Image (tube, rainbow, N blue to C red):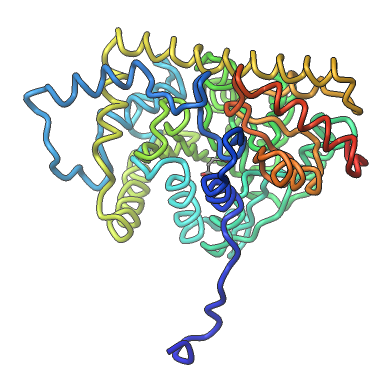
Length: 420
Ligand code: LMR
């Protein structure tokens, strides 16, 4: 049968989901999952946010509740209020249909895919084959999403491993040297995998340089509210670029996920927003119609349940308040775990410096552990993290943080630690 096809090679498992599968198969009772970025409570269990529980009960008990198709664009009350979460209620853009096009997407990945498919078809700002610059390193899925759509992928320096800080100069130089009109993908906050975000002043410099070269920005916003516990603060670069008009020459695309900040990972709730620098209602309508065509071909219309839950939260002042508290609950537990892990490593005298664990923000810590140290952590100790050394801090809790610190201490002392 295979002779009817060419080149159907078996691929290795996905780095993140393959890791999860190994973790599930591991029989050790004290195994620890620091792999996929999903919030866990202090007992290591998935957490349904109280805001979500209340919204679910409100939704299913409402007389209008049904499982009808949504429109091709998705649930309008959801994606219009989702734009307000990103840009703020009083943003001049959110109520201007000539400047913003919003559509529901299959979470952040679906939004990135829509952005890539749209740009590949229509964007000519940097030549016939759009080039997209990703941070080095970036989320493992970015490269394959854009390459699978035919975009050319390049990188801008981001992480300086010697100083465990932002390589701002390298980043700015790449912006200056890239061909005018290149696409730059920016992590809006809680950079995945490094947990390292530019400061507000650094963001201003980055955005100004991007605007000078008429580069096209895609913001990947998957962790709003997770970095600081504050939705406004975590939207800084987006609001600076759009509301404060640091970007004046090109449209901007925002890919928004509610997987993490509402804790509805499996429901695939997200949105794509295209923001035009000036009002152009006819162009906005044309973009919407083209996005609708892509959606109709690929998924017909988006899933309803998760978007209705998120919309219920965003439209009910009590639930919205609860959600903000839930964000604080999650982000402050993660911050506490960062502090505890760092303190334990420092008190064990583990070789290396560990301040980066508390300097970093959001779901992840880029520990600086080498692939061989990560492998030893998994094999010898049953502690699972991505081979890049990225650890999901949300997987730590009072019951396992000592074990993890001791395990890191052991592998650092007993394997090559040149990267630390
Ligand atoms: C992660 O980076 O762990 C998450 O975004 C899960 C995923 O889909 O890769």
